[in-house]
Image 1 (cartoon, rainbow, N blue to C red):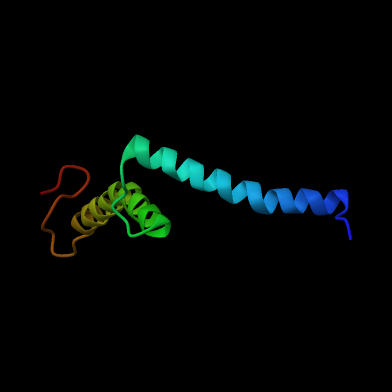
Image 2 (cartoon, rainbow, N blue to C red):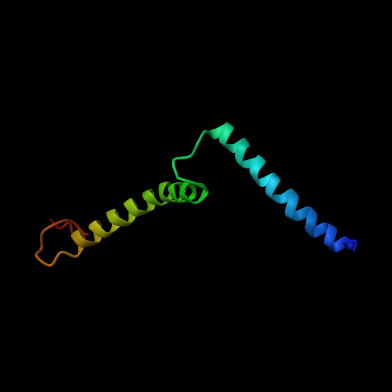
Length: 83
């Protein structure tokens, strides 16, 4: 029973793609060093967290600013020259 051309294509993908992924991972590790995560998923999450931290800081700043602008007691910074 000989594989069809589609079968050979599938067999080639199953063998070649994982080899290419492993080689790329080794190349990246040599170039950038080991990641801080416990694996590919952990490293990806750490990178994602580093990218999201500045956005969270901006959100916290904007919330604090809005709280000061809408303070009911009259304290804080008000738009239009208030105290």
